[in-house]
Length: 204
Length: 162
Image (tube, rainbow over all chains, first blue to last red; front, side, top):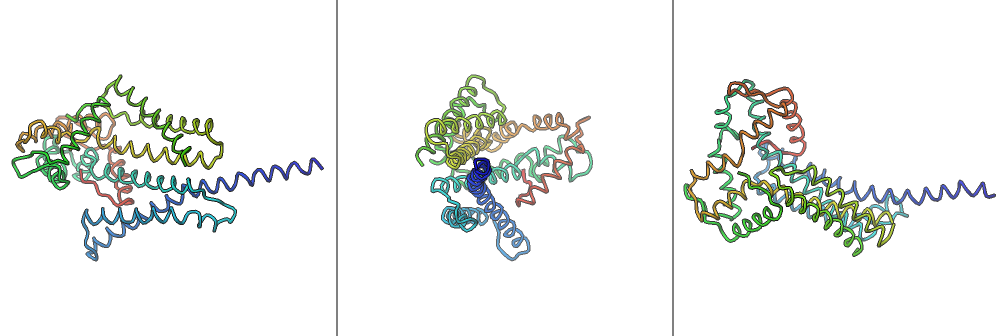
């Protein structure tokens, strides 16, 4: 009798682990699926705008991204217990996991934004791209002058200053740069403080 | 929820303390991202340890603690990457000191802040490019990297701008 009970106990223990594994997998893959959905819908938006079917700008893309991120976060929070119970009625999705799953989705979204920024603004990658497209050796000086789609350092600085101006951190009308706005002063204070605490050298 | 929050915050606190200590004692111009990732991992282990020791051993609440840790760590890494080597912040600092600056005088600072030659040297060292007699050519490894970046960029809808 005892020998018969042993495998059944083992099986029961296995069943105990299985639902937890399912819940954990669900809490990871469910937000990941929504991140892929977010990226896909953003790509579709770009594709449609390339075919002149939709207006497209950085502002529209940003609004689109953040609106969908918020909607998806709410959906993940609200629907995860229900959807998990649809997979298996015995599965439970506790409230704390609901909250941390949404936070995990937020972390995935931040990683996506950081990768996007690294790819689109990566200066070394840009140099390699310029070299790859030219298909012949380039003089160091002309590579420097044609840096960033022929903008050169002046063009890139102008682009960057205009972005900072758009973010309302500086007053800028060429050739005069400055002074800083109130927001610019706050950002500068926080940046300097952060670098002081970690003893980081300035990018110079 | 409070036990998850407490465990996670204790791990993050541990991570930040070691991070600040190491960065202050051994200052460097290198962002040291790999070391930062390792410290973040140590912080997460600390969170799990605190959770198991003081609260409960339920695997789902441990996973909740890990997810919360991941959220805190990614948020911090996002801030760190943005602030530590930001050229825009360096520009803000320069303008703040001078109150207002002339565009041409900033061009020179911008050139040095971008570290064009440093980048070229690093790429040469990593065998992405070749520099001889002031002429630069891309090497097969560099072409491969740019091809992979293009594919990945297309997947997430990004084009290289610089």
